[in-house]
Length: 254
Image (cartoon, rainbow, N blue to C red; front, top):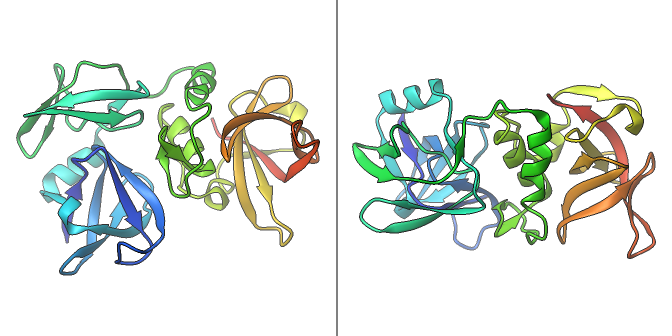
């Protein structure tokens, strides 16, 4: 078994080993993974933090040792919290909120004995739940992007996953997976800001997720990251004058 890490700001993960294949996820700087299968141009990988699998281009793979992989699994991740920041090795490199700083100490991350200087804001997670909503609001107006996990483009479950990761909570990648986590609440009135609301299609499959705010509002990624009203029926878009998503369940995660 071989192991790898992202040394790039954002690496696209694809459904099949082809540049033309659908992007199903993104790997942010410092996220590590197992290499399940290696081909001439592509590798199938499994991310360590959520076990999500997909294909990435070998030009974007940096291998690490098994010992480093296991140590990163044990460590509490140091996570960047500014919407956009700079990390420096030989040159300045932009990184987005939610990036990981491997083996971070005294203002430096370490990948394969290469030192990366970083002077921005970080968190190890585990802060008050109120901070979760503050972090979520950072993503307002970010454009919707299927498979996206950054302020430059993000999908509904990518948004909730990153926001909860900043809280020190690892969620699965997709909405239907996240719906299996936490405690189910019976009514919106039982929820508090930061809880998750899930929405289904006509076949009963969970296809959408958002973060509940105060006063019966919800933050979610639909076209862009936006705030709409929520009731027991679902999400109500005041601009359209109708419900756009049908409520399935509400979960308290932390």
